[in-house]
Image (cartoon, rainbow, N blue to C red; front, side, top):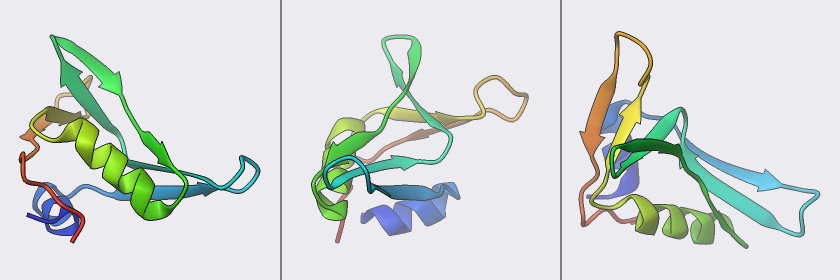
Length: 88
């Protein structure tokens, strides 16, 4: 499954941000998502020198894990990220 289709399925907004003042740094993440790891929730994003590089790094980190939205609210949503999630 590609990441844009997955974003539609979970109704998630994918952020890819250019940090102009930080030597061509790009970052990628799902807006408001936390990653569940060993019983803890971590806010996570990944960096790269290009938008694609940042997104590839992010997908590598989240594949096979559970992402959580609105963890502290009564509307908590959890999704398992497919192991085969791709950019294209």
